[in-house]
Image (cartoon, rainbow, N blue to C red):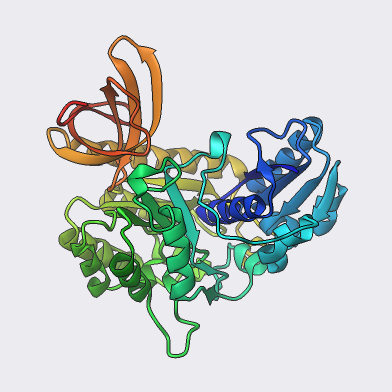
Length: 432
């Protein structure tokens, strides 16, 4: 069977898609690069915003127009809106999140999960890094978030299972550098990653999982996805004494105003968040701290927004995502008074994006003249200087450099020379 996999949403959805890929291959099926003529299309949907809902529906319609014989929808939007999902043209299966672990066996007649070499997803899903799902669900009650309703209670995967996935991503114990399918970077993902281990008896902390991976695998780079600020302390940042741990922390702030955070039911304050950022920067030199911001939350007047904007500017983030508030059915925030007009949400979103763009540029600029190690992700051969490589440093700098040969999925040292609009240009050191 020819299978095409696609998704909308977060890194957790990406990690689940990669797991589906391994399972489909193990069952003897072929992954294809496009939905045209596929026997089966599987789409992992998202419902974090109204735009994510629309994107999820659009993916299904595109697959139908491409002639997919069967379309299976899973993920958060399909879980919360199964009737609407089934009504889309061509959709033959709707599999809720609670049944996602058995999705492949439900969609295939023969299912024989034998160990296979890990291979990257074809086409646009080709990755030099592997997204490993270590946790699912959430026990927080942020008033704007619908993910808790779609994903259920927080639950953690045991360390041995995670280690097995990491080893598979690295090429099942072989030298990762000898296999184009072997990942050079592993990204740990979860709905509430920082809560990993809290549901065990006795409870564990995310630091225990990180220590186990660094101790028991040869992963060249280990990166963490989003972490809630209240799950961390100064001692956690000492883990970065191990240079294989990527110097990038994504800490969702959501608002820089204490009153807005209170209505969001966020377990932090601007003062506490600032102390955490200060500790991280003091213990992890060169760390990139990125964030998420919601603008136009119900009750956010001009004064609250001004407080939030000033705090965001003071934090000097290395980048971030900005979301105009999107009322999600079933959440407390959708019922709050003081809903902000869409036009104001858009204006505030643009203001925050401008602040984040300026601080991101300042963060990049401070590395001019320095050397960083870059994992190459893409190569374009259309220049007289040779191949134009593009990749990421461990602290999330997007770097480009010319090379006489393609270097995808390799790590090289680069001397940074030029600040571009969103990237940095450098020279390979030593030249390749």
